Length: 466
Ligand SMILES: NC(=O)c1ccc[n+]([C@@H]2O[C@H](COP(=O)([O-])OP(=O)(O)OC[C@H]3O[C@@H](n4cnc5c(N)ncnc54)[C@H](OP(=O)(O)O)[C@@H]3O)[C@@H](O)[C@H]2O)c1
Image (tube, rainbow, N blue to C red; front, side):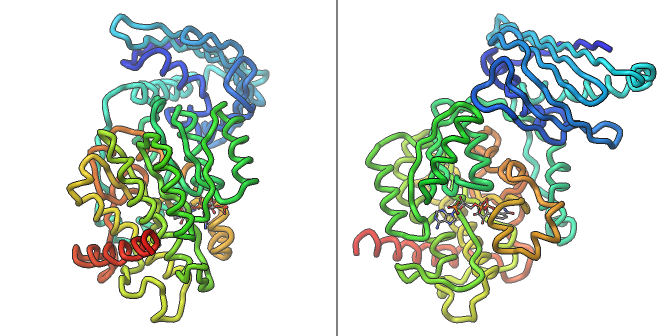
């Protein structure tokens, strides 16, 4: 069976070729693909392999694709082998006079016996899937921004549909409406904390693959070296590594000062590092650890890097928070959790609520007009933090948890896409703004946010000036 489709894109041929050669990103534009990953280490070339799971008639089939021909900006040929069939994707690329790209996509499917005898029955369904995939690719390679619709308030307010969105199912459901990120981030410097595992690692790989210069902040030398190797294997890029224990304000301030001394431009800051502490711990600086790591440190890092971020026409700060923050109000008079019996999830939720409040506060300051602030919530993703700190939840929910890549998707989108530049101070899940309050008494007033900012600033000043 053979099919041929053509499409044009306003994007330059080099960008389009690079995007399609990263064939594991087929998951972004072909709705029948549920999962895809690159199997081979290093930059993409002849022989690079990808594993692609395709859903067809309710059955998942795994294909292993190999690059057969790799002729940059001209021709790309891939062969995918499954148990009972193989597909050959041949893609021709040509520059158009307007600087865009014309694509010719040829697909050949060869069935093994006995499937070949009944292949004609599947033909209309295969064609429909191919047409849907080509429509998805056309959207992805289109330059125009997608409309962003706020998530309906009533759905957030009803806990059950709201919470279902946090799962793997919620991600797949939301993803149907997106276009892929065919972006070239060369020339963009993105700093991401907590890059050594989970969401931070997934975002680091994705952003480095799109060409960004990623400054990865980790706290452990061996994990830093492993991350560097992983990024090299994944896309051939090199990271800038910085080391800091971000539960220490002294180390956070020193990190910011090192970055400011370099005077390297910085376009995006992602405050992602985090953990949930089930027992109350004090840092060497006398701060309760959830507060130190989840609020005081990202506050300090953001404040101290704002002078660098403000040097750009448009810069972005992304604060990774949690849906858990819906359960708590901020307690500006007890940031160190001294006035009540300690409860780990509550301490975590209060600190995350505080970072949501600061996101909105920063967004409203006139001196930050060229910087955009986003808070985001990854849903429930299968990461070390969840396995370690919420073992019961992890065991019962494991099959519903998102992959780290799915959890990190909105971090990557907020850091890279054009659409979020038109929003400021909002709280995102799956590329849509959500309400920040569901339960009565949890939303902070403007006065509370200002009060919280004063407390955090006083603390920061005490570290800066003794
Ligand atoms: N996974 C979810 O379902 C979920 C849901 C809501 C919010 N979040 C948030 O998502 C963010 C990422 O978490 P994750 O789920 O990806 O967990 P993870 O895999 O455990 O990653 C957490 C990252 O933060 C780093 N980190 C922890 N404590 C640190 C410290 N004191 N100094 C410097 N770095 C530190 C970790 O470094 P090490 O590797 O050295 O430990 C790791 O890189 C966190 O802010 C978390 O609260 C996650």
